[in-house]
Image 1 (spheres, rainbow, N blue to C red):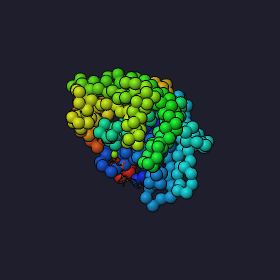
Image 2: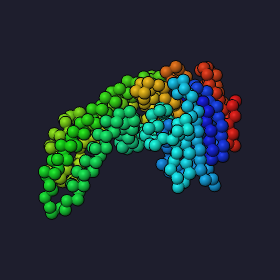
Image 3: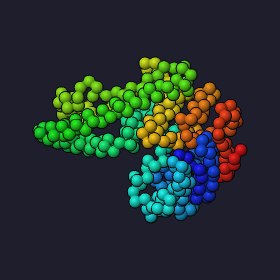
Image 4: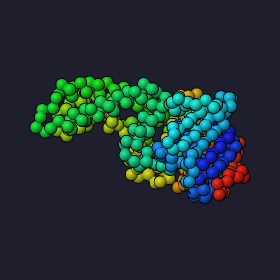
Length: 367
Ligand SMILES: Nc1ncnc2c1ncn2[C@@H]1O[C@H](COP(=O)(O)OP(=O)(O)O)[C@@H](O)[C@H]1O
Ligand SMILES: [Mg+2]
């Protein structure tokens, strides 16, 4: 699985760009604002039919132009395949595989598995629990349709239950029979979601530990724990036992919508005591665990995009990361960095197949 050639037309800062990539490690270095991240976002588009950063396709059209095209030539299981994405405001976004247009984007997503690691992902570590639930749910539902449907069902019933609690006037008796119907449905979906999330975290935790240990060279002890009240008792029982609380607060206080991933260093949340470099190490280890999980499920190595992740990491950790991804259990990698010398030195030390590009004035030059 690799992107061999990328062509951009009027995409963000590029009027046009043509690039040939290595099937292994590609480094793109250049100053801030030269357009390194934009190249990775174009590659992201070709996997997920949308930008990593914005849901508004029009924002990705080069200022002053009327459309953009992103095209990639891939090697997928030894087959040459062309993926095309074109967008023009007022028309629908067009996605083609070998010139044949997709009817639904969902039919394309999954063909080219990809994992992006971006500085924006740090919210996974320092943000609220919703970020971490999104992380878990996004990965599981990418490959598990049953989970996606159950998750959608849960969200809908939860909204209905909260609506009933909140909108019944204070002077009225809440319809407890209706509440019971919601409880039964919520408990069933919730229990399903709980089990899948537990399996997922159980699966990635040891992988995460292994990557963290390697990158940090065993300097810190970390933990990744799935936190949920469903570990204590089944959801139907929790809803029953706490109904008076829900009636008083007029809100559903228990369920998998309250789950979290507890990210610890020692016994303290890493968001409280971790340095920026330690938090970043944690993030990268989590993302590499995601990479391995997805790779196992789809039976091929996803494309890995490491966007500007070396800032705040010491030389040893950067070297460990490059060392890791240079190994054979990884496939095609794209790394961006502002520091060309650092990356060059490390690549020479690590060896293996790679290409190093420098980006200046919208031109990508092979070094
Ligand atoms: N739609 C657009 N049209 C023209 N330029 C754009 C557009 N979107 C972003 N840019 C430009 O892209 C540059 C940022 O590119 P980026 O890939 O984030 O740089 P970096 O090399 O720092 O990763 C900015 O200079 C910004 O003005
Ligand atoms: Mg950038």
